[in-house]
Image (tube, helix red, strand yellow):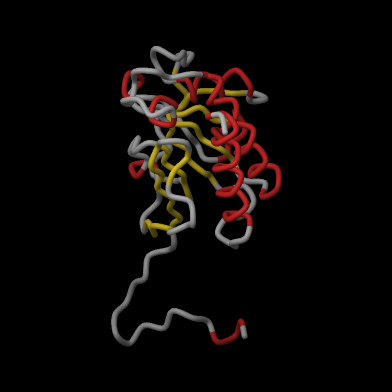
Length: 188
């Protein structure tokens, strides 16, 4: 199987597993960090390709269409891990837009591809720790964008291509103590 076919298969299975959960709700922010170099089995930042990014984008767009979430693609460290989002998401979450266009050499292949293929993309400096869930492909460090409290997820797939993945969702903080009640009995 070619690398492109492997990426499509791997990510397709991950998207299907996300869809089988109830973790993603309409209009929530879903952050993606992705090293296409790592997917290809190379060191992060050394062999990025928009061809791999295209495969990943298509599958994540399917996740977006089926769940109505908002995608946020993290740029690489050369752009301080800024993010590509739709203008409507930036407005809805009061995110600060910055002036830059990601390119493969500064921003990364995934963010560059997303910027070129989203409907009305903007780059924002940060998600202000407002993302509800995320997918880290190739250990790109997305945790700074997630809301507290982060809950790691264990899906059946551990890799996309050659890149290790991490998946997470968030939940509201549990506050109180031993006398606190966390489940509303009225909802039964």
